[in-house]
Image (cartoon, rainbow, N blue to C red):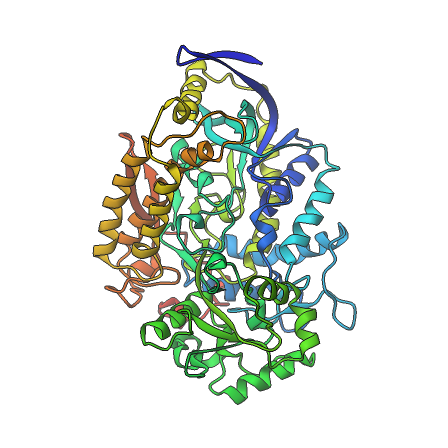
Length: 619
């Protein structure tokens, strides 16, 4: 314990810890990384913003995508790779897409070996369901609570690996020396105690930033602090303009607006209808998907019947299983045309399926609507609408190791970018966590072994971050931080939401500057013990910087593609924007700068798996 005089008034103490690898985040990616690092012989600390077991991963419902070929033996990693690239509008890092498609089946089998209880086919194989953008039934699932089972399994495995867990801690700063990460600073959300972690490697597994939008499916932790930590430390951020608005969040009542309605509902045959009762998705199938989706309701119903009966899928899929960006924009268009549901969304109907089958396949959805909206989904339609759900962008990483441009700093899961391109396919997030969490953990441990001893962290750096952390408590008055956060989220929803324009984006950048000025004077309340006002006052800076990244990248990309829609540039520009990815970093003067880069050319053996027409290249 080290004593520190804070502001010349109070004596503060901070604890010092030493670990080979520090994992920030305890969701699927963090747990799998910690297991991988521990198995490699490293001493590991896992820092969790919430209680262990409460990570956002538990909210993932539909399943984990992996080409096991249990429901349809035509599936393969090559088809999974093709679907991922096509869904991402070919802005994916093809190297990560290949690794993911090839390794996902083994990671699912590994979870089963560790005790995960997946649903089964009549033959006893891991069951797989249909999801938007996937050619074949590919999502291994446990009802509609797949993320919960994944976390349960990884925790059960992880607690026997010898790692130390620091629950309800928030990391405020990454330390560096000579271009390499040396540790981090954190504080306890419970008692306000201060902690310095010396580390030879650090892994960011901090999830996304969807709490920056007013209507979102993200849990309270999703304030973007992982992105901000990396950016402040000098890491590069990529593709931050691409925000996925999941098409089906709850609409009513207002207290639950945005809570996710799993895509598994549509995978099990759920139909989307407008206020006039029309199954409108038939009108929104893009040309690049025309050959893959049904033209009529009869054809779509026949396909569902065939899949439900356990036969191979031989007909074109229902249009409700188009990629999430397409479905979300279609619901938005129906609303703008005056055909929205009662409360401003669309109707999702699964009631035509057998009641017991719905309860068996979608138990979470049945109880969610019954308890929160007084709707029996076996008898009534659900009201749904787009909700901010996932950030395709994130920290730029090496595809083979998950290391960032900062030596010793790694990132995995939603914290990293590359796999999903301009739009993520449903189910790819859970397999992303376990594939790249494992890779990050093993390479972080390997990197740590090359360091003989822990680097000393400058006392001045520790003093600076302590002063910054405790500053809101020194103020005698100031604005409530909740007001600033609320205004930020409302502004992002209106100006950097599902539909964007130059004028709104430029206004948003001005608004962010004003919000940042307000944030400097917020009052954090009194005391460090169980003080949510203090916590929120410390989150604002990260939320503003991440919002600025998304806004700046969206302003610069003058086209519409995947999770980025510009009303003033409504069509994709394949010749220019279709070949480059945005790259955000901090300039020498501390300002945010943006540039553009391209991934290496796709090798011919992989290019042959893709549609040359979609790639917009000559043969």
